[in-house]
Amino acid sequence: MQRIKIPGLVLIILVSFISFNSSHFIDCSKVKNGKFYYFAKLDGRKVFIERIDSLQIETDAKTNKVLRSKIIWQNECKFQLFVNALSGFKLSKEDSIKASKPTLIEITGVYSDFYTCIVKFSTLKRDYELKDTMYFQK
Image 1 (cartoon, rainbow, N blue to C red):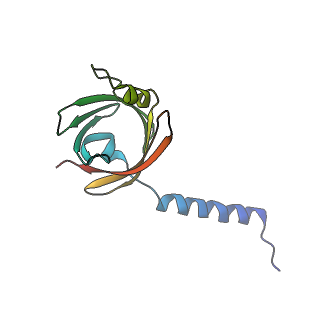
Image 2: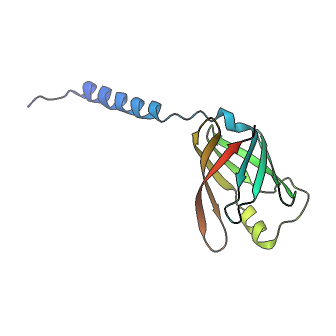
Image 3: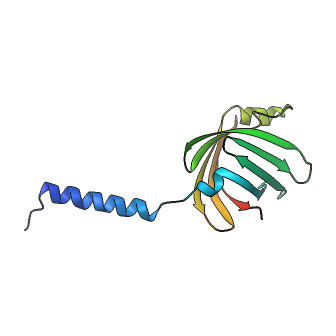
């Protein structure tokens, strides 16, 4: 049986690691700034988003209610969203509890017309992890 020398083994591991990471690279530069929309999971209403680096403005298309939230980017594809942190009105009791902890958002794919993400947030009753799709406004 042939023995693999340590430098050869390190090289094989390094090449495997680089190959794996480069094939899973996601260019999230299109989502740091821009205009998007999504459909609320609860009732299907359309919500518009305008994101300017560390500021996110969400407008409910049905009620015209506006939420101004703060964003802290953790890396190019992951950020914390502090819901309603910059708005001038009070949230309901349940929504204010949700907003007391940041919502964690990780971009999982960026495509020509939309991007996909995982959204994690907590309430008093439980933790949630949702997969969602955000569409680019044209």
